[in-house]
Amino acid sequence: MRGLEGRTTLITGAASGFGAGMAERFAREGADVIVADINVAAGEHQASAIGATFCELNVADEQSLRDALDRIGRPIDILINNAGVGQQPGDLETLATADFERLLDVNIRSIFLSARHIVPQMKPRGGVILNIASTAGVSPRPGLTWYNATKGWVITATRSMAVELAPFNIRVNALNPVAGETPLLATFMGSDTPENRQRFLNSIPLGRFSQPEDIASAACFLCSDEASMITGVALEVDGGRCV
Image 1: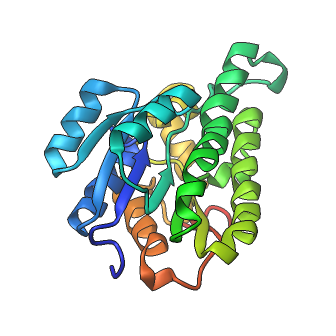
Image 2: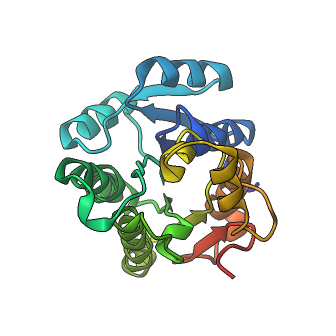
């Protein structure tokens, strides 16, 4: 992909799941990848495996972000806001307040904080921001109302950021993955059973869960110069679920 080689690429939540898949693919494309994660052991292992740099980061903590950017010590060309959490399925009125606040902190506050501190770096030179949203923000599943709402926020924020930052040559897009083979899958299903898997698969026309490499391929395209005229989109990588 044109325009990825040598680009400093910060990927949050990159120690596992979709983030790890994107980190590996961007490293193969020649990007200068920074694996950012709160899980130090897993993050260091992933960074070492792909020839990237690890940076400890709690995406919901502003001081942690400041410290991480100081340690990185160079401008970010590509920011991928991938870190996220899910919720156990249940009636909307039963979610604990602490769990709701965690959804807000990781899925919403993190994007606000990264924009607050990284956009000023990008404005003089341009850049790319990719937010990982979800099909949940477009076609919500019952029992996941507050998670769905956070991903709807990500999609709206992406579109607004794209319009506001276009004059600075900063492109902002989102990806909407369908449920994938990641550690979050069991959370969304409540429990990882053959019956629950089949129930989810029945809603995906292509008949399979998304894989990290599916998301990585779409991310590489949207962050590359091949997509230089694309901003403000929320691309569904969902096997047809939202059709």
